[in-house]
Structure formats: structure tokens, C-alpha cells
Length: 196
Image 1 (spheres, rainbow, N blue to C red):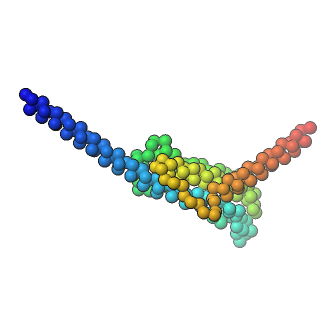
Image 2 (cartoon, rainbow, N blue to C red; image 1 turned 30 degrees about the horizontal axis):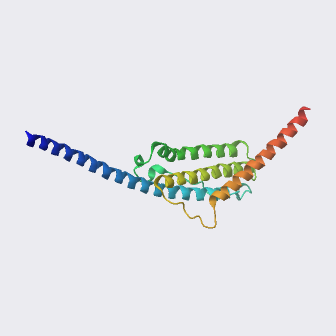
Image 3 (cartoon, rainbow, N blue to C red; image 1 turned 90 degrees about the horizontal axis):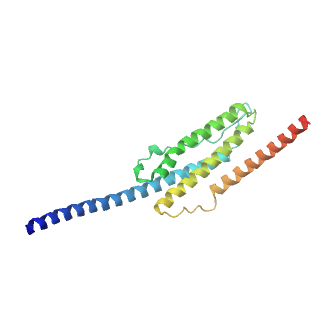
């Protein structure tokens, strides 16, 4: 009888150890996959943000007809094309990364609407201003998301060197918002003068 009990205890202990070992290996594998994903995707987001900074600096180039057109192509971020195990991220962070292309799509629609409905030739300044604002916002959001990914797995921030794309985009965004606020105030004053 005692040998049967010891046999059962041995089988149970063996099963528990096997499950614990499997859990430990799976946990290590998930951690490594999360680290790889975070490194790879944060690098892609930082590259995307650098391209956004290029768009922010694009004020248009005159074409042969004298009308301004974009000199810098809009960047693309396609996280689904990155071969990583997305389930290794927490759901909220995974959603932010995978939802980012939709945010870029909405920004592109705003830019398109500005060029179609409010920008006037030949310089289309209203369209370029909206484009610069939208891509400054996207670039800053991409850098913030890259920071969240790095923090999730405990990776130190990138050394940015002398040129800081985040500061560049923040400065341009603030300038655009200030210009818009001044235009809105001017419009409000003019409207009050007409109605008085």
C-alpha cells in the first residue's frame, strides 16, 4: 500500500515538475519574443518618425506650372508586415501598435481634405500646413509608442545625437498651432467688426 502511495506521489510530483518546467520555458520564450518584437518595432517606429520629420520640413516644390507639390513622400508604417509574435505583448500595447496605421490613414484624409477644400494655388500653403501638422503629430506619437515598447521590456532609450526629431516636430507643431490661433483671433475680430 505504501509503495502505491509513494508511486502516486512520484507521478504527481513528476507531472507538477513537467508543467512547471514547461511554464518556465514558455515564459522565457514569451519574454524573448516580446524583447525581439519591441526592439524591431520600436526601430521601425523611430525610422517612421524620422521620415515624418522630413515631411514636416517639406513646404512644397514648384512644378513646371509654378504650383507647389510635395517634395517628400509620406512615410508608411505597416506593422503586420513585421514577422513577430504579436501575442507576446500586453493587449493594450499590441492594440496601440496595430492601430497606428489607422491613425496615419485618418491624418492622410485630413491632409487630403485640406488640399481639396481649403488650399489655394499656386502655393497650396493651407494644405502643406495641415500636412506638416498631421505628420508632426504622427511622428511624435510614433516616438512615444517606441518609448512604450522599449520600456515594456526594459531597453534603454536610444542616443539621439545632435539632431532631435522629436524637438523639431514639437517646435513646428507649436508654431503651426500658434499661427492658427492668431488667424482665428483675427477672423473673430473681423467678424465682430462686420456685425457691429
